[in-house]
Length: 299
Image (cartoon, rainbow, N blue to C red; front, top):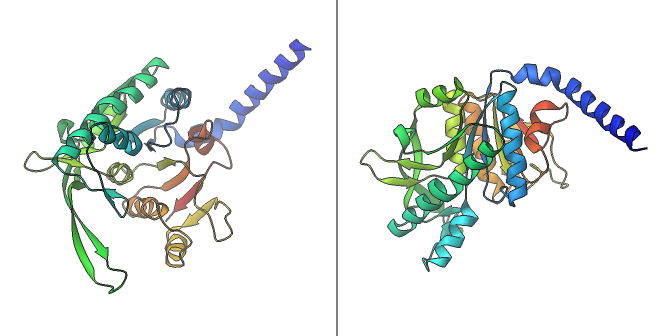
């Protein structure tokens, strides 16, 4: 009985590998930017499984570039240090004390944990931040808020929150041409040497657009973009996404993710996928199976 079950499992594994062949060939040599959200990191076992999948991608000739967030972990550290932190339209107001904690948590603890997890699975990950070799140069983000009562637009100072201006594509190409896997913390440098906190999705979109990645995968804690009836959309165009935002179907925290996707597509990325990073082998299912996972957005 045990031998029969074991043989059945081996045949299923062989069949899976065979079915994956055309998708392996399709993505061979391509750069894939993967945004790992703070919520999607989950427990150590989930991180280990993610690291194993990323290592497999590189082994199969696909070139993953990891950009990670860490909002929950930053919030926990700020609370421990008794530093108050406010949000405006989902963006963390970042003063001098806060940006120091942001850099410490993102470029220090989280970045090295992800790199170490990949290395333990046999990959060769290198943890860097956007400040290293001017990988990501940013400028101060001036955020516009609309007064719900008057409809007036007002600029809000978010402190040391930035938006990417230039991406060092030569540095990224060096990683792509090697067996190294970059793990990037979304902390950028300004033209005067100041440190900027960059939204993780925004950083991933800018990097994907700069290198014209074949895919940008936004791993989050939801299964994808949902329609008006609550069903996950398998695929949609930029125009369809704009319509769903205008109708209020896409709302809340999904709006910046979809906006990032549309911007990346307009910069030359072939496709953007919003998917649940907590699902087992989500990245492999998306890249190497027929139906994929989550919502694929195309031009």
